[in-house]
Structure formats: structure tokens, C-alpha cells
Length: 79
Image (cartoon, rainbow, N blue to C red; front, side):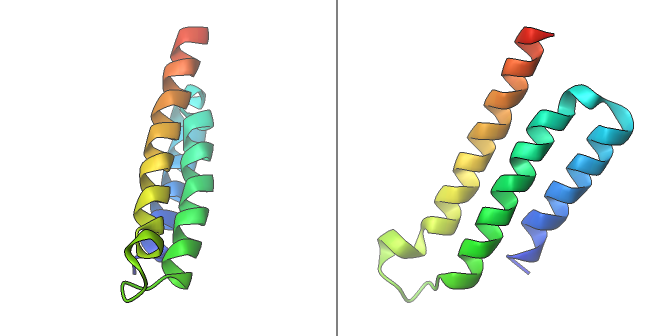
């Protein structure tokens, strides 16, 4: 479930952005790319591993959030 949810959110965001407001599409694509990385990390890491490695999915998730937000800010400044 933890690997599927980010992908579902990313796909839904891309679909909604494409259907309603194309200025959201760059941020949606960043979010989808980050969701793929996060989902993969969820599948290959375990909470039983050392803390630095077990936190990789969370770090990926947070970097994705920052990336999507910064992308949207950049789009808004350029439009």
C-alpha cells in the first residue's frame, strides 16, 4: 500500500492537471517522478535496516514535495 499510494496520487495529479489547468502540469510531472522513486525505495528498504537507509523513502518523499512546490512557484513567476 505504501508503494502504490504515491503512484496513484501522482497519476491523479497529472490527469487532473492535464484536464483542468496546464500550468499545474510541470509540478505534477515532478511529483509523479518523485512518486516513482519513493515507491521503489519503499519496496527495497526495510525498517529493520540501519536508520540512515530505512529513512530513504521519507527523504525521497520530502524532496519530491519541495521539488513540486518549487516547480510550481517557478511556473507562477514565469507566467
